[in-house]
Length: 374
Image (cartoon, rainbow, N blue to C red; front, top):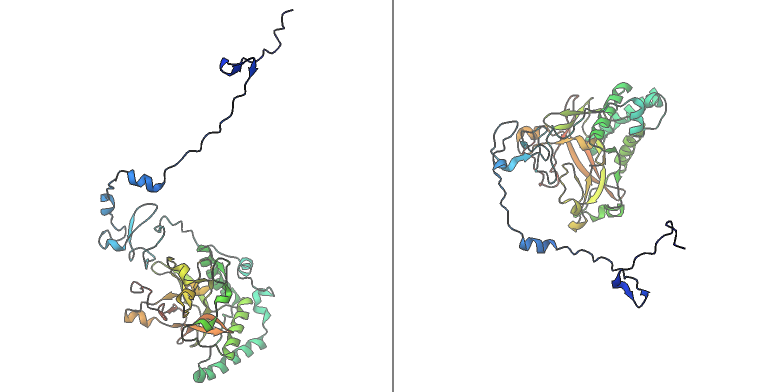
């Protein structure tokens, strides 16, 4: 009987694999991995190409319309337009090492406004009644003022640090802290009133004042009490009478919103602590010297690029001109506090409301280019 048409026919075996009535299986040979030439071998045989730079040779500054001083002419990495370092606003002090974007391409958004609840959360303020103003009785406020007055008397002899005096109006304090929160948020920063030690940076054990070349002055017991008093006020939402504003020429800067006495502790300089050797190619314009060790490889800097406080926005003077030096109203001082290096900004004279805060960026070293500062 002939086979049904629905039965499957046996597979056809090519003659090449038939041998004496037996079927031989083909061996599977895996494909060989492709071999790529090294970049060195490619460059040895590659033809040289000549790039025409005429298009860049004709770049003009968008602001002034001139193409001179090409060593100070920056090209935006997005739109390729040119700007002189002193023409762009805010000015650029040094040539950026990484990508640079002009103001039109930098996606600058309007400053974010914060509600009272968000401000308290942002600064991790301890909650009490009505924005901490009710936390202090009038008797306590008078005691605080008496204490500040007694410090003024001793200050003339010992030059002791004075605690800042917060603004009494709680609504105005909200505006002050809100301006700082907006500025920090615009730079994608977190608020921190402490030095921070990250796993991939310098450990806390590296920050020891005994490593300072030539030694470091020790903060007195009375001044440590003043420091702790200021930190406690911050945690209650009582900040220095300062407000962060944006200037088209200077960028973010700090204005005094109430009178400040000479020798008042303005702020501690905070941020991430790192070895200076790790930041040699960093173009951050706000790094602060923390420790100048006898072994330079152990020297430390404070980097407020991710975490920091209001000290991040206080500008430096142009110490090449008499006009710039006249603006000086703060000093940067490094102290040993319980064996660790700390940096503080202290008033050098009485400061009136409306003045902007400035200090000398080159207080310890003369490497920062301040001759372009306004």
